[in-house]
Amino acid sequence: MIILGIDTSCDDTSVSVVEDGKNILSNIVSSQILFHEKYGGVVPEIAARKHLELINFAIQEALETASVSWKDLHAVAVTDRPGLIGSLVVGVAAAKSIAWAHQKPLIPVNHIQAHLYAPQLNNEWKIDRFVALIVSGGHTLLAEITKRIEMEVIGRTVDDAAGEAFDKIAKLMNIGYPGGPAIQKCAEKCLKNPVQLPRPMIKEGYNFSFSGLKTAAKLVYEQIISNQSEYTLPDLAAGFQDAVVDVLQHKTFKLAQETGLKNIVVTGGVAANKKLREVFHSDAIKKDINVYFPTPELCTDNAAMVAGIAYHLYKADVTASWDLNPQSAILRKGV
Image (cartoon, rainbow, N blue to C red; front, side, top):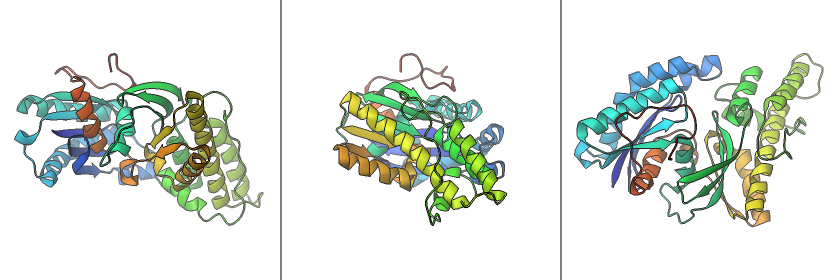
């Protein structure tokens, strides 16, 4: 079964063709980093306009790369939530037009659930229940997954997402965008002990908060640039990265132990962070728990994960009517 997937949930225009939920025939991702870099974050209006410019080219390129035609497609899948509403509108409109014109089923996909499916692409997968950590620029949440496509959210950020916090501190330090890779690169230059920063809410349930951590990092930054501290910017970057990773690791493994689940999936853009992967793999060995990550290129937003999970949604009779509208919220009634 061949499915065309479309994702325009934030600032990447992505179109993919996936066969039987696991074989990636094409995965086109048109990044907008250069257009948002000078702002230190995604500008929603610019993102929506760029999607409009790129979407038709991305669709054509995905089909040509996969060597398939419209008649070879069995269904069209699209991210319809959550995300930037202006960006989502572009993808949903494109998917509805294609599905209508070629009389193909239209499959709505939750962007968060798609991220959770990313490690399953190009792999044999027999795990239906696991603890999931979704950590990106737009989302930071813990969930328990059952039956592969059913998700119960256990905890989420009460302010900034982890990736958003990385972006803001990287912008403050003027070291580049996106913030995650910039902080990681800067932290690798730390020659002594990292700055010791607070671990917000680390022992308080399963919700996350990074606003206090940002404030603490800002205070240290101001001391560094005014020559009132022996620390350097790499020391601050390493300390900030360590604090974020520690909070994510502690809450995720705590949930796994309390639920008795022996499998953890970590996904989203921040899941590409080397420090995070090292800490999670190390703790997993100590606690006899399996940890799964997508390949680095599938951590960030992409349509392959959308087309991949759509295969299972279609088998579960999940399709949309022609009046499908996007929404910024995570959950939609019935899915």
